[in-house]
Length: 192
Image (cartoon, rainbow, N blue to C red):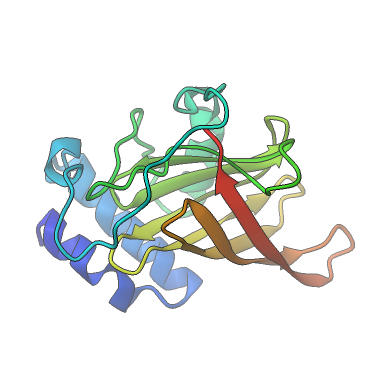
């Protein structure tokens, strides 16, 4: 399977947490074998919805999120392959790498690291992580699916729809601090 075939099939094979983890590991296999070079997937492509021009509201204080690589590798190892790309790269003209925040709460920050269809997510308050995950981005449907761990150690997952105006809407499911299941809405915009 080559990279473009992989990207074209992401939306059809990702339905459960196991599907997400399995598909992530397939991409990691491609990347580790040299078949997923950033130059191969960064250029815009036909069939990908057009995004508005992104205008940052602030500078990216995390500059690629390299300070979290060790922690992200720990989450990735739990999913079967600890590889996390040291660099970032967009996919088919869409680059999600940067800071995302709810419109009315800039301290609630989610940092996304993207390498093609592969994502790392670091969410928390003011740069202090409370959730770390890895996942996939489907550029054809503009859908993100991530699985990971909250700082309490409990598993959680998030699903979101990217809008052409650089807003995301979705849900996060997991457990609250008392172990009860929870589902919370996600709404955030890219700010850096």
